[in-house]
Length: 269
Image (cartoon, rainbow, N blue to C red; front, side, top):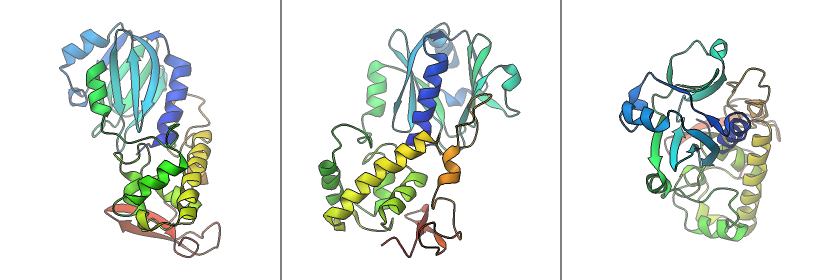
């Protein structure tokens, strides 16, 4: 599932390519991916100008002129491709937004969705999300205070979108590894220097992942050589049984709080 780096990467790339462009056509192959009747979706969205693409947590917000918003959550298995008819993947698309000859194809939206909201509806939908990793007011001190009241383990805290918005299975493991902390550690039991290390690692891992285009390897457009570049840079995620890049011991794969989890049992404590 795409997380903060993937969605921020998509946001930046889409703004380069569809910002201030008019939606000239709409194809809906799966009405269940919408939250309003297809006719209402068409009448509101067709002919609208995409002023910009924003992001909140793991979701993209297509800001349409006239205070309408499309909220995209790719969820598990969802992806996008931007291109002409010749670039269309040999897969079923759930929704297509046309910008002249350029089309934004939404694929794999079986759990994901593209919902239409007004301003108040969007605010209500996003209201329960926690702070983002790079929020200006999420200082090291505030993060340490959050950990003191965190429930469960580091894995559950870091992936709880109401606690911290944008991090999921992949980057929670990568952040814990970079900090040298086991994902099973209790947040409230961390020492001050460990909390500070976790905060620094969160920023460094997410920055590196964004720079590399995230870990999802599906190219966004023809000639896209950046998207998915972090997949080869993951130190522990999906590396079960492989030698740790720090100490050489095998990376451990376990299920923790019903989530798959990867870590080094030797150099993470």
